[in-house]
Length: 112
Length: 115
Image (cartoon, rainbow over all chains, first blue to last red):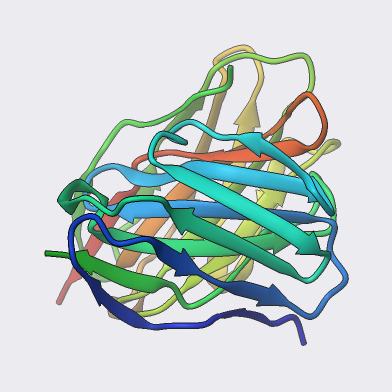
């Protein structure tokens, strides 16, 4: 069965800290995604990657960066965490654009 | 760029009543559409998808959706809902990027099924 694993379920960080959110998939998918989910706003795409070391900005990339050094791992980096980055972060992977996304369980990040 | 509009943020409905959750997308040459469901405190899972062919698509748990190209809509329906259908439903469209593709989601519709 498909599995997308996010390293932390809950995370509390202070303003200004550098934050790493890790995501690993075991399906050999080339495509991986990072979203944030906020009430009333749905899922908003932060970054996506279609191959190792290849990445593209999504709709809300400001304040974030990503790293894809290995096919199975896609990391989201908050360079200097701010309170408006408090949110639920969802990682997903997909075989291709015709296939569904497979989601991790999410990381609820609180920035104080 | 693609966008997805879910016209209702919340839909309350009584058990065994029919329901329609509305979704409109911005036009594109080719479009691939999805509905996902998120039950309380759970992750998102696929409900159904439209890639091509028949415009009426059947999914899990008795849901179906109709693709309407002229109205750029992909509304989700169920003829008789159950309490267990209470969840948040997301419409999504797959759009090509410069290298790969991205999936854009609507803001979601919360379905409340009342006894």
